Length: 129
Image (cartoon, rainbow, N blue to C red; front, side):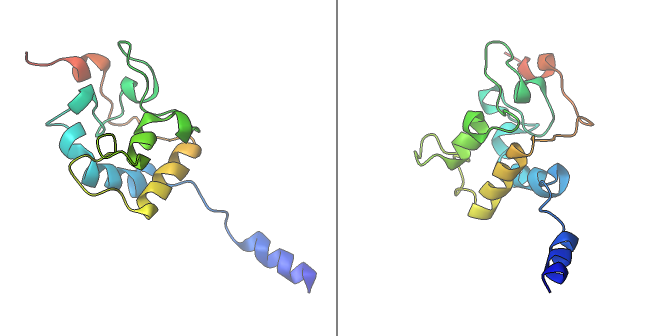
């Protein structure tokens, strides 16, 4: 009987890390792109493309995500902030607990972000003015 129980447990798939395209991008698209997308980049941050600013310091700005560490990831810290002036998204309701959980698990799993759509730092920091 114990062996049968262990066999059943072994057959259950472990909870896989959230998939960026299936799980994370829809959250970003619905809640972040209006301020950090193609048309507008508040704080010189663009979240619709993989960019150097996401994971490394660019022009003296700290990275937005630290793969594997939600405590050091400003994107996550802004999403979970209880301060209305700090919390993201600013112009919308807070993310749901399920959405926050997905982001947390994605970052803790390494924040895999496909580089198929990539922007370079010059593109992201160039402004018409």
